[in-house]
Amino acid sequence: MPSSYLIMIKNTDQYLIDKILDGDTKAFGELVERYQNFVYTIAIRILKVTEEAEEVAQDSFIKAYDSLSSFRGDSKFSTWLYRIVYHKSLDMIKMNSRHTTYQIIEEITDDALDHIENGLECMLSEERTSIIKKCIGLLPEDEAAIISLYYFEEQSVKEIAKVTGLTADNIKIKLYRSRKKLFSLLAGYIKPEILNRNGKAI
Image (cartoon, rainbow, N blue to C red; front, side, top):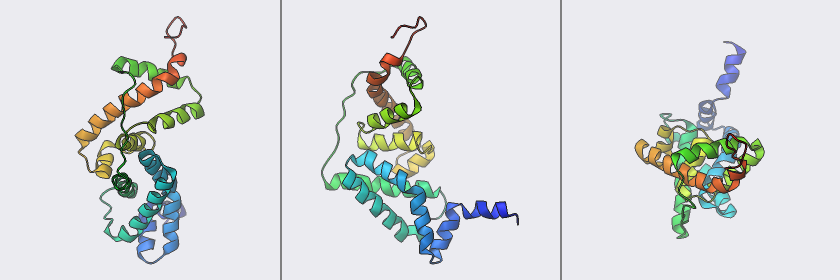
């Protein structure tokens, strides 16, 4: 068997999962290292409080470790793990009786979405990412999570449905509405960047 193939197999989540179930606890550390940044990202986007996000991230990995034998591989491991994080984050919100209310800054038309998207392209990559993350943090908890999963982790609608427990159609609706809310927040940042054909700011 080619060595390159063996290396590819050893880099898969399932390979590490099999090792963990065989008693290799160090292999779980590799999984934690692989996913810890985005697990925390999901938690902080939902909870918006550093200490709570850190607690949820830690609890989620503990839950994943304890429940690993129940992972059947009918979805990606990341999808299964993000589901744990998502629901633990919502449980934390319920426990603290906290919920973010959101009011859309301005109504964004479908045509305006294209203009704003073009404006984002004018920004430097680092600046664009920073502004988008800041605005995502202002969205309601569940919508911030869905937007993050879709755009930053590139989870499909079907995978996000598994994470959240919602239907695929519901996810599509939420993505559309959340995107408009996000772009209403972004509009204030990128309007000076949007130029019309005459080179004048819109």
